[in-house]
Picture 1 (tube, rainbow, N blue to C red):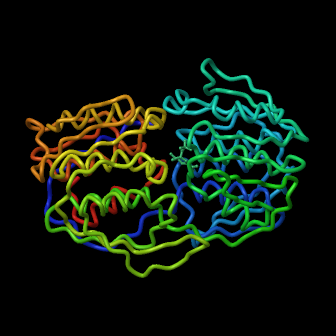
Picture 2: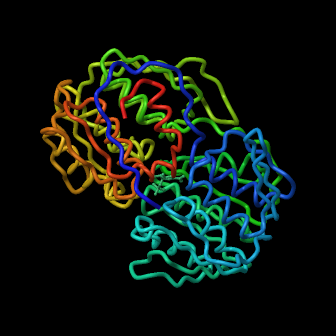
Picture 3: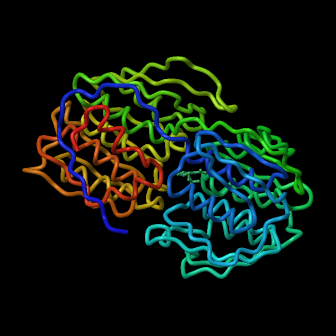
Length: 442
Ligand code: S3P
């Protein structure tokens, strides 16, 4: 695909009401579980981004019927738990770690073999973290060196139910084991010492799986009974809080701005960014709070604010793990120092986000120190970024790096060019038109 460079410049205030696309995590799970139910599910508000479309294509390749109607509603007829078919070709996961890891879980407990391939970014990411528990369940793997893609999964049916304590705080690993457990006889247990996003648990229950969550010694013990029969559902996907964070931080940073992002999912396992921004002094209000499709939702109003640097408590990290790049941009314009720790996972996202954010912010004139597990940022106290006549940031196939520096360009003394905005289509295909509609100059 050809790259799509774009230049972002300081402009007047951002104003307006927008809606961001559906939540990526919930969208993936809604397709996967609908594809395993018997009968037709209906999904409204599905994120039509490349990552989710990769999941849809894979579920089709394994037997589900998936169609989008003229109103943008998706209809999925599932094959039933245990009914996945052998895909005829390699499953192309594109840029999507979530598709890859969750689908590896599904394949692991079916008597099928699947090959997973992905783009240059995904092919660098560690899959050993799911290979390990899924091997204990009986699946076998042939992976590229370092436990990476391309890799082949040979599933086992019946698989062996296990009890697995997560060594990393990862919703993807948790979900891979739970999804494998869905077709294993007996009870599969996952122990989660640090809570991560709980969309899998909520949705599995919604589809009728027997799943319980208990607190044991401060950890979450999640148990699922396998060989479940899933009932088709009507799903409404709320707006993605991870996508909403970009226009919201933009409104906080650009003087005079007043923006409402409607219909943002605020599941407590996802809303950490908004708590941290408020603790930094952000003028954020939640309007019209309600429940949509079993998830808390609100319209978030963001007005330009003077932010103050803080120490971000490491235990909040899992609830905002994808929002650190944009938080770093906010911190770089705050008054005083922001300290973040406990973020080693950021090094194995779509890119090494600690390294890329440190390097890029330094080019924007920010004093930033990169540690093994975080960044220490000296805020510029509201002074615009200074780039010596402009700079170009390499997004390295990472949508959130591209969007974070795009927002930085709106508060910069000279334009910020992003070498390639095309990865944004993985999670937030309407980013450019929505930012334009608010008044951004790009
Ligand atoms: C996700 C979990 C997180 C997150 C990713 C989506 C999910 O990854 O970064 O964007 O949908 O389960 P990890 O499980 O690797 O932390």
